[in-house]
Image (tube, rainbow, N blue to C red; front, side, top):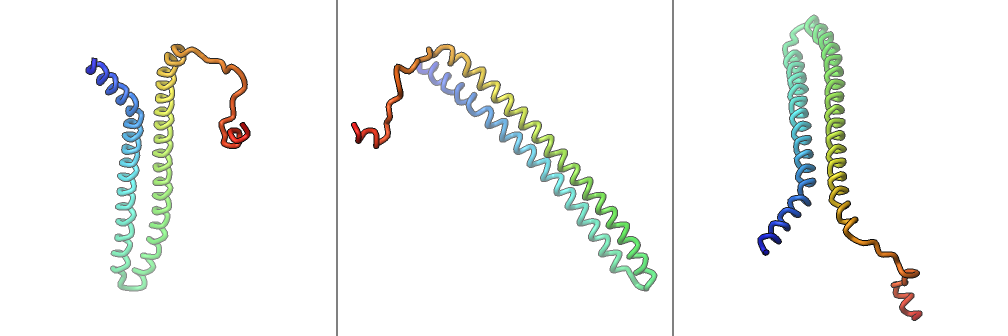
Length: 143
């Protein structure tokens, strides 16, 4: 008998914590994806900056300065395009996470509704037998 009670308790605990485990796994996966992407973006941006600094250090005459200025404009265009691409990628990750989260909430809500349905059918409904009684301290003092 105790084994059945312990098994029932374990099963209830497992069912109770399953949605939380799924939520935590989803959060961790999203955090991992976003962090990895941000690290890669940081590496790209730092490489761009370092290459520009190296090019600036290599300037030895006016013609080199003019070429550097021209390449600087090209680099800024490349940087702008890269930032737009990164923004799009982060937005897509956010939308994916949102849809995964909505699916998880829908799944959890449906499971809860399925569990609540048999309990609601088994419990007879009790109709109140008159007006509700006040339980505040003010109502008790008047009595």
